[in-house]
Length: 336
Image (tube, rainbow, N blue to C red; front, top):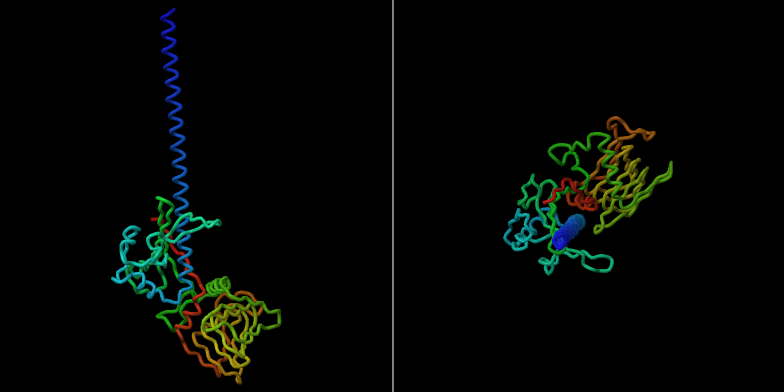
């Protein structure tokens, strides 16, 4: 009997040891799962921070009065060299200047992102580079396409994404480039361009059927705006700055000057009254994409344009200023 008791004790100890081992393993597995979940959560949050940096940078670029070449030159720093490294420590040790943060005192710490209670939840950095077509380290931009490299950090967790962006703008006017942009050659593309401009309009006008929208002074030299008129428009007296897109007929009734772009896409009709003086500094584009009943044509129709006595002065600077309200749009995204 005493021997049986000894065997039972050994079995009990073995069972207890087994249960302890299994319990410890389960506890370890649960702890590891928690660590994995926390690390995954932090990594996702760091990625979101990097994306927030991209959105911030796009707005900085949209509102900047500097040209892309000027911005790239500033980003290159005193040595004039743009690094191609995707390592944050290497970039911070160089004299390349980040687009964000723009405050030199935040260069090492990064741009803070705060929650609703003003608590810092993470930081991000964004560096500006050229695109592959121009050469990533080249400071001269030829195509309004740039590259943003953004780092998001939460504690020791860091994520980086590289985004290629292209400036949203009205295509180069016919005669100002080596060849006409194909987006200006078909009704469908012209309607798509018009929809994009409408989506970024500062002011949207919908005159009643049979009526016209009257526009006199509009915008200013310091505030180029985007006006879209879904119908006919009468211009003058006054001066305007920005982009004017009208889907109906345009009549200049009194003295009027426009700085930027006038786009008549729809009925394709422009009449400048003989007694009204004026100039266009920038550019003018007219296309008939719709019939009198408003239906879409299969191909651009015949425009009607009477510009006498107006004069058009092509002005690249005015066109660039008119395009400023349009954002840089992502065309490619890659996680580094």
